[in-house]
Length: 310
Image (cartoon, rainbow, N blue to C red; front, side, top):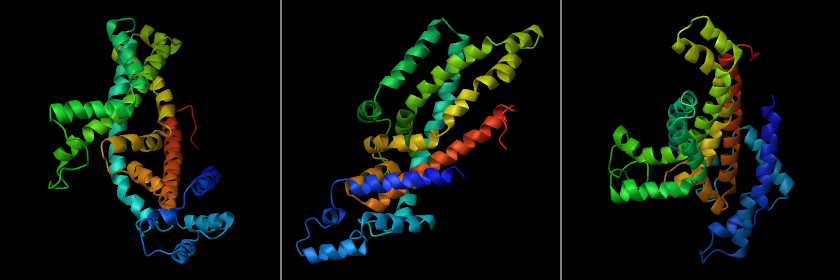
């Protein structure tokens, strides 16, 4: 139920910011057309409803939004939602692989750092965590392209598939997605490594862990059954909104690697003042954020039975 007022607030802010930004979309996509007159521009503005007062434009859009109608794209003259849907699979591939890399690399690094506290391994992982936060994604992406694609020629410079390759060529797709997914996941890897180290050290000092050792339980049982299950609760907290964050954060990475996803598509639409496409992108991202928070709440109850999800 909280999703309803949340999405309503997002819709108001999105509509206001997009429509009040400088620039006229009609003049932008008719720029350079010699046979376009002022009357033609006024007619186009009437066709797209841009000649109405701002509140009426919002009400018209809100009524259509309830029926999942985001309007027609100014540039492509197609349904904005259908256009957006075409780019979602590419971004989801990138975001999901980045999330998998974050969990598969960041969580073990944090656990190893906790159990090797004070050693050079712990120090190296902590330095990696700081570097992972400090390095800008666009810069790292360019460096990796120069090294792996230009110098070594092991991986492609960008795109989602080599021209002429079959669309089901999994190996070729993996070669294209590897670099952008790693760059997108780097900050998350650093976050999880630092978070798991802190939480694991805190849990290992709890009374119930010492009691488990005193009972003579095996080290593996104490670590994986008692300690890590409690240490993972803050990780689940951080997972709330991670999918939407990855999708939103993919904009820069998609630009660097020419990845045909929704971030790049929405950015191009924003430059062209294609209001329906931009509004569709923001609303779908907001819905993903709310959905991921619901999944987080459910996961709470799975990890910690003390928390009710009813």
